[in-house]
Picture (cartoon, rainbow, N blue to C red):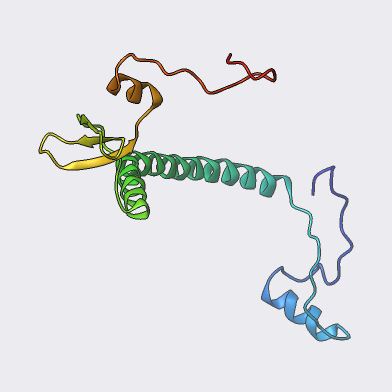
Length: 155
């Protein structure tokens, strides 16, 4: 043993290490049982374990690099699919889609609305006319407001 480890107390040390000594120790004991104990390592064992640890770290690092590379490739391969999925899901939920397209505006004088049609002449949507659009229809003749001050005179 080295200087770091004192000589341990031993029984039957004059018998060879191995099966013979184990048999004698077992035969002369008061009983045997399974028990977890702490066994100090020798300097040689510690050096061997350090070497094994560094080899394991290299192998583990290589596996981690393979995993990271696979994750990066997976992300690249699925970006477009995820965008397509989200866009399709949005259209399904809305039961339609938003599109930028050229539309043509028509005034409906009877209903006082503005109607929009696509290039094929298909109705797209309508909305109420804005006050400025109504004024453009009726010309530039301005009407006087019917607002009176408290004295009973106009404006």
